[in-house]
Length: 295
Image 1: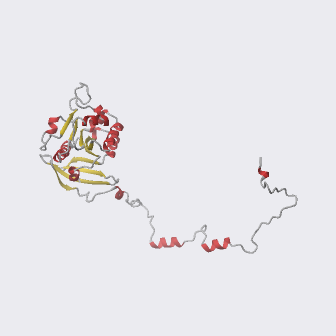
Image 2 (image 1 turned 60 degrees about the horizontal axis):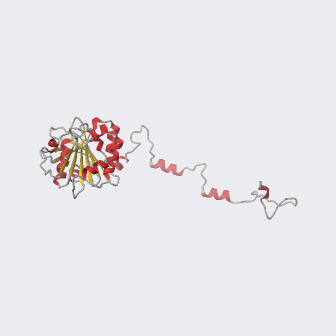
Image 3 (image 1 turned 180 degrees about the vertical axis):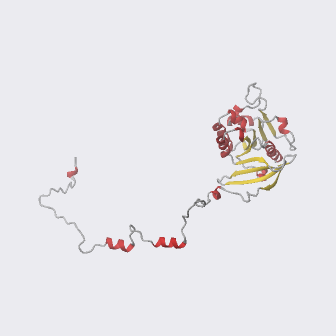
């Protein structure tokens, strides 16, 4: 699945690379940048974590379509000389920024990293901007790096919930290998999960070594919901075929059979009837039979 994501993401996709202090997702982020450039897609990078020189270092693809908006030296805009600041992370500012360079194709927006923005902008505002970017338009796809151990679990969960794909990276058993836990949501709402062992070469191309043994098949939400809730009970609540047959034959006292209903509804000899004959003194008006109800 990692190879499929590198080959291309759908329009309006939001891909989150989630790393931690045990393993950096910076190289995998550069792999996605390199893959987009190789497909001749324009790429705009909001750079907070590394400088432009460090980001471009090692990229073999043509960087003519790579536009770096540096927030590395002054992310908060204290010197008023930064090309981009955390406070400009909104749809209006991003649209204005992208219009400064004209491209025939919608661009891929790379955020390196979202953690800088989440530390200074409220999570609801960040999620709102990402949700608006998902609608497409000038931005074809958004790829963001998120340092999960820098935020509360609720903040990480909110950002990852609106993403169409989440790649959580962790160190592998070998020095040059890593583990990627991938969650992908389709437009129909289907969720696919997978786990792969991968390595990144010097040109930032990704090689999937293998899938982990406990991820033999892709799991979906529908499959997860089919787990048996009675599997771990200390008593048996299931019926055998004999018990089920006996239950179906049992006549409950408050349930009438068809024959009993017919017998009860039939009027036989001696059944009660009410007969009323008007008396001569009865006050009955033919024109207004309900005059006694008038107030």
